[in-house]
Image (tube, rainbow, N blue to C red; front, side, top):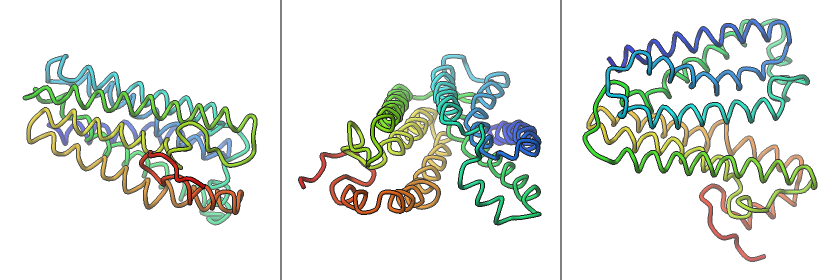
Length: 256
């Protein structure tokens, strides 16, 4: 039953990304894929809730948390201009690199995001089809709530800093971690995993998504390209920041 729900989630996400791909065919702005990816989790939760076979109190808490996380992230991306012109630099680069094959390759790219949504939905599908065997789910929910709040605070601090300064943001949470938004994002997914572990052996499947998120943050689309761009744009100021402030896990900065 778990895998049937995941396949259904894939179909739903694929349909959404197909529509968004058609939109970007007209607008030539692929940034909408990020908004769609974030929002797709709300649709997946709605699907899981509609098809749920478990008691309401087993899945409602995590459903609320996932929807809040999903809509907050989608709203943040929209506010940052992800779906508006001009197109984000990384997508401009892809469009130029792919040339006449850009349309077909963006289709594959959009559908890859749908597949990722389905894979990551295993982080919270179990409570919709099983009953809890312990109260560990409340610990998981607390971790996810802390993660959402921390990520929102980090985003707000960065946005406020950028309005008044053009240097390296090293205030608030950013003085303890170079990437507090990524750290708290990971906390959200750790919370999902802990929540699902309250459902016995079936909940072990939720460990995989948080590992994927951590791997992506640490080695693929998260920290490495973000820091490379920061060094290009801020130079020695960012290198000094790297020496003083923790890369990921928040901790007191080193003294200059």
